[in-house]
Image (tube, one colour):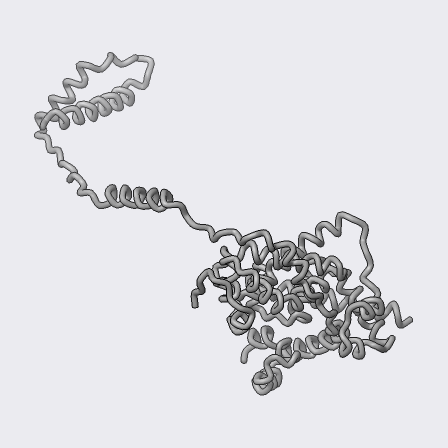
Length: 203
Length: 160
């Protein structure tokens, strides 16, 4: 469905598929961008948070993702899913941020307890309320943080963001064979890091 | 299901996104020990990562985002200017003209033996005397052949 330039109401936009919402964005409809943001701010923020480990950096980067989506909506070719396109923008921003981070002193992952108090919803807070689980989460975060940027992105996209192979190919721009090899390598490295962490905590 | 299918779908099935694959996965891993091992490893890794699946709630980005974009408009879709289309058309037309125009048939030149002998003699008259220091036989033969060719070309061109 090709839409005209007239702005749609919020109710109209909510029932449109992503592609039509993006077409409305391309024609300058700010409410369409609001709808696109409502749909994808949670997964995009979550992905960026998992890549950066910083809530502030993730929030800033998520804003950049939707700003770029607004600016470039008219150039989207509709060959991929809109969600894949947004993840791809986010992945590029995460890579850039990682490069900048490498150029300055390393920051530790945020304390999970601090993160929970500040940001988690009630269901998730309940799930993580025991010290044991907090420690587990911290160890896993540390293990993921020790991976290189490429490995971390694959692990986060595949195991935490639940993207399938086709979407990951579109997001990372690599072939199936390369993706499969890199994912297997990232999996082995993460496994080794997790085992190292476990050995350190259990003398 | 084959090994590739299992590699692609094992995590999705373990995460509960593809429940319809249960039977085919069980059937394949019953026959393929490599895939059975992969599945066990995937399961162990996903269990390790489970504590991270508790999601930080995303902030509402819209108020700040709106402040950023309210005075801007999206970039226009990249369109080609009219002269780009005109130039493309002109180039295509030129190529079509060059490739489709009728080719002149190659004219066959036939000489009577006595004409050929005469031409070679004429060539010999205009050639410089061979240098005794050179390999006279070879050079003379080569020069004669070149001159003959040149004269033949001239002859053919003037023979219209």
